Amino acid sequence: MSKILIVEDEETLRRSLARHLRRRGEEILEAGTCQEAREVLEREPDVDVVLTDVMLPDGQGFTVVDHVHASRAAVIVMTGQAVLDHAITALRHGADDFLTKPFSLEALDHSLERVQSARSLGMAPPASETDLAAWRTEHCPEIIGEDATLMRVFDIVRRVADTDCSVLITGETGTGKELIAQAIHRASGRRKGAFVPMNCAAIPENLMESELFGHAKGAFTGATNAHKGRFQVADGGTLLLDEIGEMDLSLQAKLLRVLQEGEIRPVGESKSHKVDVRVVAATHRDVEEMAETGRFREDLLYRLDVIRIELPSLRQRPGDIPHLVGHFISEAARRRNRNITRIEDAALAALQGFDWPGNVRQLRHTVERMVVLAQGETLTLDDVPARIREASGAAAGGGGGSPILPEAGLDLRDAVEQFENALIVQALERTGWNKNQAASILQMNRTTLVEKLKKKGISKSHVAA
Image (cartoon, rainbow, N blue to C red; front, side, top):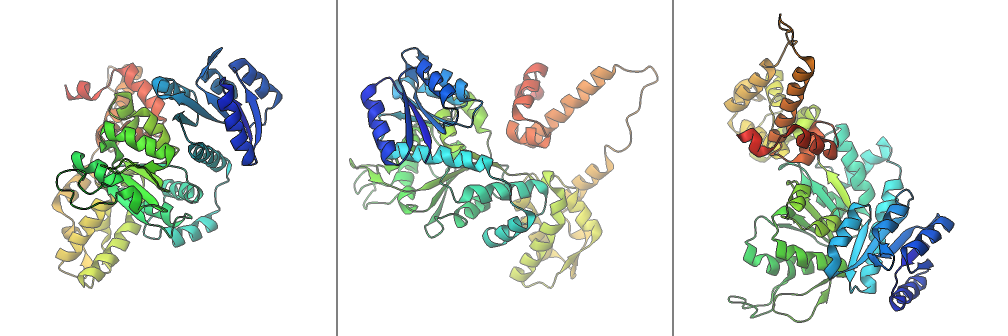
């Protein structure tokens, strides 16, 4: 049983919500204004969830959010479509979720489950190495590596899998986002249902709505039969929306409604259908920046990004390359019927010295090529593609030694500034100017990186010029 504070000035709605939640077995507190809410929270510091309207007689719901910010209470904001911007502001202030009026009681139940699951995950202790190893063997044995960054990913996946929280998986192309989504599905209570992947970048814009929600017979030219959409196929299971950043803004609005109400309406039909689907989204893009520039709906981002899983690039875990190479050699040799079991140290060193912009996927393809073209039973340096040998050699041979202090001296602050600027630009260029991934490489918070970029005047257009 949870203790829930409802802050709503419309008495009929407040009593209706309270009655529904009491039937669920929750303990309910009520307030009609910001001031009343603050007084209740001072008397009842152990409130678990605050459900607040965004527009109240004596102020806006943001002030309630600010008041509970220091506590463990989750906050759900209720808003009308006309004042949706206020809900987004509340989310920026620290609210956990929002509901757009009018909403169903089922949508309210789903929202409560989302925020309570997310809060409980944050308080759960990490798994022991032994428990995590056993979990990993059962649910995601195909993901190879022992790096600490990867272990943290596995621990988050283990904790989030058996909830219905929406998950946003970010990472460069080739880092294994779909494999992580599959692991979430396999470790969840939905494992007996379907896992349905959908690449939003691979489907033409004019067919996307039909692919997602289905269509009725005769809904448009060429629709000779009714068609089930991905949501219906994934009913009872998990839907992966890969490359979510490529989805058109108009379709994002429809997706947002589906995530709130759990209902889809096929193209050409007037009737909605209930669906029970866990949505996992994935992208290699910087969706925060896209939201800031109006290319991605900020309200949808908050709804999808309940739990964020950031996958490390291969550059961030070079110690895993020998494990991956050994696994890919065995895999390719078996598939290609080649008797190759090992790789020379010089060849392995060249692979370890390369940047791998395509990450694990590129490494897999490279090793398979080497196995197919190898002359002997051991992979040698000559089997490594020339461009990788050259790039790796340049990386290994460049940048060595200590910096030299000029005879005339130098401005240390200016030298350090230039060095820092160069590293920041390199990190941004390496990640395609994805600030999340660049901040991860530089081991700093994204907000810190953004502040530095503003202060230094560094931008993509500025560097290109």
